Length: 72
Image 1: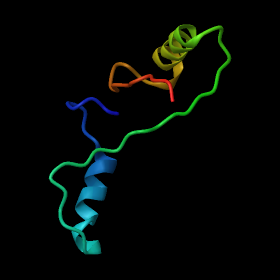
Image 2 (image 1 turned 30 degrees about the horizontal axis):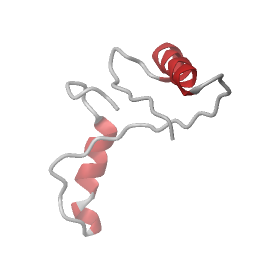
Image 3 (image 1 turned 45 degrees about the horizontal axis):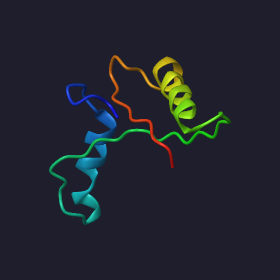
Image 4 (image 1 turned 45 degrees about the vertical axis):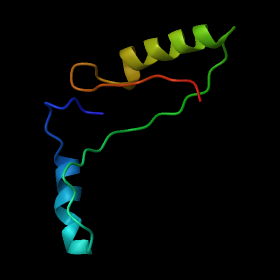
């Protein structure tokens, strides 16, 4: 997800469109991305460590985005 202080034009566009489509206005709407990743590791801790490193290095931009890594 974009950090709260970063403008979200896509979320704003969707929020603005909701009333014209017959939906109640949203008081807050932000759009992010969801990444599912399957990796092989010796154990869950190592899998989490690998996924965290991947997110930090490539999958997210930590300057403008917050991210969470978890096992499914």
